[in-house]
Length: 124
Image 1 (tube, rainbow, N blue to C red):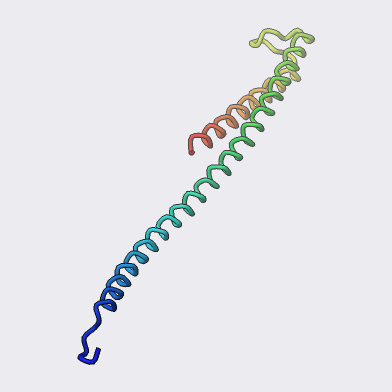
Image 2 (image 1 turned 180 degrees about the horizontal axis):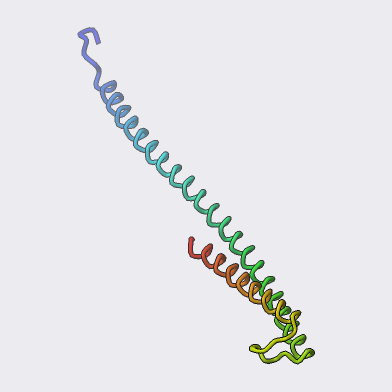
């Protein structure tokens, strides 16, 4: 010590300290990368769950609309039978004509709602 030399124990300590500090830095970098990956995965999972819920709700709405479509189909057929308007080419009854027009609109609504639901499912 008097000669200004660093004792070997202190040199070993400083070398070990430098090695440990490098290792700590490396592990901190890895931890930060893993944490950012975890956060990104959590956000993606939340988006997937939200989209799944949206698709589920859209599909339920489609099913309700399709059920109503079936009810309307039966109603129109029964009314056509009662009024004797089975031939679709020759319909004199204006009430049946207007119901058929609204039935066509309803049909396109059902198809459109299913297409939207399918598009939602394909996005994810």
